[in-house]
Structure formats: C-alpha cells, structure tokens
Length: 188
Image (cartoon, rainbow, N blue to C red):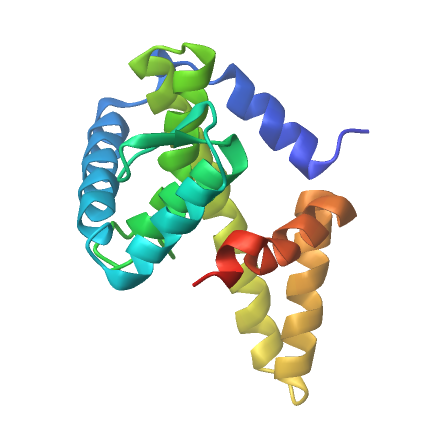
C-alpha cells in the first residue's frame, strides 16, 4: 500500500501546466516575482551576505545562486537561495506560511540543471505549494485539537511529530529536523 508521501509524490510528478487553473498560475507567477525580489533585497542584509560568502566558500558547482551571481554545489546553492530570500521576510505568504523559500527556489535550481521549461518549473512550484499547504493545514488541525486538552502542549508536539513521521516517513522527518544544523546554517 502506498504511503502518503508516495501518493503526494506521484500526484506532483504527474501535474501538468495545462491542468492548473489560470488563477493559480497567476498567483504562482506573483509568488515567483516576490521571492526573486526578496532574494535580491536579501543580498544586502549582513546575514544574507554571510550566507552568500559561506556558499561561495563551498566551491564552484552546477547550481545558480540567485542573488549571488555565481554557481555553487547544489545543496549549498539551494540552501543559500532559500536563506537569502527570507533575510528581510519580504516574501509572500500563502495559506499558513512562506513556502516560496523552497517552493520557488528548489524548482528553479533543479529546473535549470535539468533543462526544464519555464512551464515545467512553474508546475513544480505549484505542486510544492500544494503539498506544503496540505502538510501545514494538517499540522494546524492536529495542534488546535490537542491544545484544547488539559495536557495540550505536550500532546500537540507528540501529535505533530507523529504527523511528520506519517507524512514524510521516519527518514524524511529526521532529515527535516537535521537541516538547520548544517554547516552552512552554522555560519550565520
């Protein structure tokens, strides 16, 4: 039986630009513009500049650093692109958060590397927003229900962890939790 993440991944992989409503595409284009503008502004922030310096020090790679004007190893570039785009918190807000840090920057990086069209990258961005929005909404509903109980906060954390494990699988949840302690993040 497929897991939740298998189902979501299959849906995202099959999503085509033609199947996305025009109003959603319009919002995605505005999101793209917002994240790119926030990235360009973020390069002037001292923290953003430190991220770019650390990324440059990671060496030359195959992935564009959007606000830096250079290429770096993929993992370092993707992390820098996401980090710099939220330096000033100028980026978009969709549903419950700021998914553009990853839902825009990761498809751009991978799309360029894989030679995808702008439409394919936009479809990947929409898919990432949809998956993230559903994940956040599920977590919010779990937390609100748990917080109303006498031992609410402790139960909420347990339920959110269980939801993450169910959605991502044990390995995915662990990787998500480890991401903020990467070497690049520690340079901030």
